[in-house]
Image (cartoon, rainbow, N blue to C red; front, side):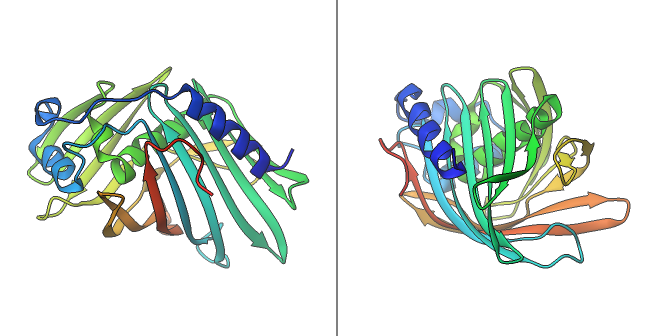
Length: 260
């Protein structure tokens, strides 16, 4: 089965499992650090239905190393909350051949597969290291694209200063930590975690490495003000390198069918 077919089938299955949530109120955010409350307020999430589902379409470019060639990509993603699931599909090309990367996270299990021409599997990653890495991504998604979901009781917060907080997020068997930095306009400008795992080229081994997603621009989508453009970077003893640049094309919340 092609990655696109798997994405479409599982996205619809997760939609059927997702429930409806009530309106988000000030009272539900009162336990959060002030800067997180302000970020949620600025996002426009207050007074709207809590996010049970979001679906997004994006494009950008990606590379495998600091001296590797950039490759353009496009893709789509769906997250649900209650129960939590995430499915992400990227389409790109390498040496003139199309390839697709499919990330799936449902329950306690996360997987990643990369196929060339929808036929030949070149990466097949799974296991506890993959699930730990994708737990970081689950929290990152909330921060970037669903600020109202940050009321989740599985997130524990600690204020560092007026513009910085740490978050500890537990999902199933894994607990990860991240640092969030905000500017003077209550906008998220960076997210950093030491709990992300960098996969080898074949997805068979993992190395714990600092990971960050600096934000370059916010914009209004579907009555929510969220991240429009941002990067993803790996940090190591050799330095930092940006491996992904992403721009959000569209995002929809609490809709009944997959993005097309």
